[in-house]
Length: 225
Ligand SMILES: O=C[C@H](O)[C@H](O)[C@H](O)COP(=O)(O)O
Image (cartoon, rainbow, N blue to C red; front, side, top):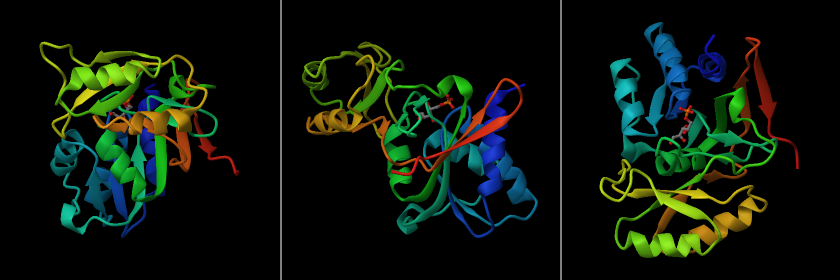
């Protein structure tokens, strides 16, 4: 059984008629978008807000109506994947390069629901290299500044053919090891002018649907502070 499919489809139970729904990116969000597409075909009325060109293309193929960007304001619910999530529902995202649009959409969302297979649930963030979106201009200098924070930072795709995001930027995949102070790291990275955004999503997720190998889906809620 596909644990990503289990999780992606389960979270769609939260989608209600009339909602504005953020459509995440990646191989788990894919299943949620497919399930939303089936509900739309059966009469559900929603407007979608895609977090990548990939998800926009999929939504259009499935006939999901999309909200015009100019009308984008509050989003009721977003369903998105993650590369790592810890027990506080702090996240690393951006393995697929969509972190900037995902973070903009998450910031506008009343609820951010994460869908993931059980391998993504970790005690502490950091085994997955942190994706950091940077501007192409003088990217080598930006990488030096990022490295000075104590990580190995690799240009995604390599120097000959760098990966380019939907926003025309590059990604540094940064190995910090276990991230002890995620908020401090977010502040330090954001202070570098060439950094556009990081894949740390802190205090944003409301709940997570985790697909497990026994065929169940476990729901984790953000712990009360
Ligand atoms: O940039 C990509 C996104 O943050 C994805 O949601 C994340 O990488 C998880 O993707 P997947 O569900 O394919 O593992």
